[in-house]
Amino acid sequence: MNEYAIQKRKERIKFTIVSVISLCVFFGVWYVCTAVLHLKPDYVLPSPVQVVEAFIQKLTQTNPDGATLFGHIAASLQVALTGYLLGAIVGVPLGIAMAWFRRIDLFVTPLFDLIRPVPTIAWIPLMILWFGIGLGAKAAIIFVSAFVPCVINAYAGIKQTKPVHLWVAQTFGASRREMLFTVAIPTALPLIFTGLRISLGTAWMTLCAAEMLASNKGLGYMIQLNRSLARADLIVVAMLTIGLIGTIFTVGLNALEKKFVKGGRRG
Amino acid sequence: MEHHGGVNKTPIISLDHVSKTYLSVHKTNEVVRDVSLDVQENEFVVLFGPGQCGKTTLINLIAGLQLPTSGEVKVDGKTVTAPGPDRGVVYQTTALFPFCTVMGNVEFGPKSRGVPKKQRRERAQYFIDLVGLQGFEKSFPNRLSGGMRQRVGIARAYANDPKVMLMDEPFGHLDAQTRYMMEEELEKIWQKEKRTVVFVTNNSEEAVYLADRIIILTNTPTRIKHEIKVDLPRPRVYSDPAFLEIRRQIEEICDDTL
Ligand SMILES: Nc1ncnc2c1ncn2[C@@H]1O[C@H](COP(=O)(O)OP(=O)(O)OP(=O)(O)O)[C@@H](O)[C@H]1O
Ligand SMILES: [Mg+2]
Image (cartoon, rainbow over all chains, first blue to last red; front, side):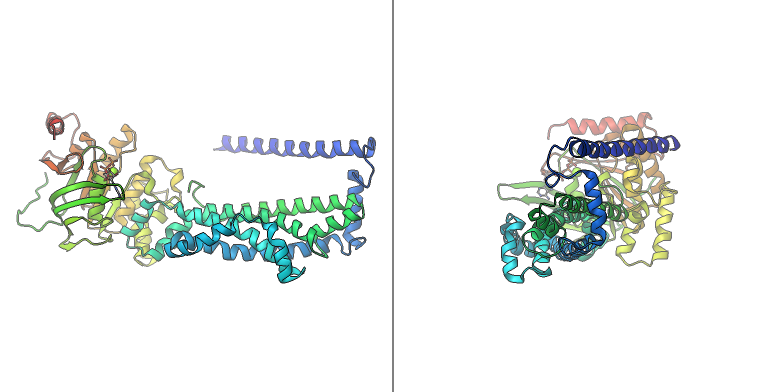
């Protein structure tokens, strides 16, 4: 056990070192290509130093895109979280209900199968027509993108319930309703979390697409506007911010999953 | 040394000309044909039959998870129409809830029936101790060995306080050594907490070790081919000549063409 702990720790240290080296190599190559060799003009490919400078400026300045970095982050987060949470709140229960109740399955599944293959960005024009370019349209698009993986995974999770587990519950006198909550949903939980994670990823990606098309604030908008101003340094700042926030989300959701999903991921 | 038997005692389980045919789009599959069987209170009956003959179907018919196509199943005088807490079932290893701890699994039945927490915990703890798993209450099934999982399965069935225990090849997946250990353990538990048991196996050694009475089944559609009473004193010894003689009898009966 102790032996095992030591080995685990060694592995973790190794992993950390390799990760750091990987990032250093990336930034090193980038630095050499730009600041040393000047392969491309600055307005196309800025050096890491310029990006850091732009980042520091952007913490306080609203030039040239109308908001500070935090302003953009807040706008993006508001849209993304509104759409994502709505998608999860509607999608997960719907997926569960579709898998558990035959009638709902029969009624909803054909409709869902029709909507599912429509790419999320195809919804953008219609949503803009309906909701304008404010929070509503973008949240609605994110909603669609988050909703679909939530439904699919919750559905698949409930369908994984083993008949023998339902038999056992039945011999214990559990009603069908009780079986849903004590057997089927716990069985589905790992896949429900998979759905939540996938849809968080798609929601965050869709957000940028939506903001690049129609917006006046947000990280996607920041990228789009600075392209027209040829400010590659600010584009990179926005991109790295998007990546960083996405990573933080994933880490948070993994921690939540660890807390709720017990007894291994073996369905 | 069991004496089951006032002949006129009402049986606790009774199958009366039970048949089961599964219907599907392509074919009808007759699995159980005209099985009649009485099991007395606290009797240990083993259903012994070849693979795929319909043993699980028989267990499910008694459990009420399936209904007979014709005939009647009665438990404790009442016709079986649905599963109920008076019949506990122990399946193969996969039947534990992987998302519940050992305690969660064992108290599942009483919890479903609404037994207050303190009471059901006590009861669950008693059976966890009885099967020798004290200290593992908070472990999840994926951390347990095959033998330990089956102990949990047995404790889980017991904790619901059933009149009848139905066991469907509970040791079928275990290695030989663990299997011997579990047979011995089950016999001890049963001696201490007597219940009526219907136990399915296709291992003649296991059958003779555990049974008061062995019901030998034919291939599908399964019927009762023969019945052997085992009167050897418990705990039985695998190498005892009388033990081996009964095993020989079973094999002889099974070798007989249908
Ligand atoms: N719910 C069901 N619907 C249709 N056919 C079934 C069903 N359950 C079992 N059968 C069929 O009945 C036959 C007997 O199955 P059963 O599981 O009762 O046999 P078994 O003796 O328990 O087999 P095993 O040795 O594999 O445990 C098989 O051919 C099986 O395909
Ligand atoms: Mg079987």
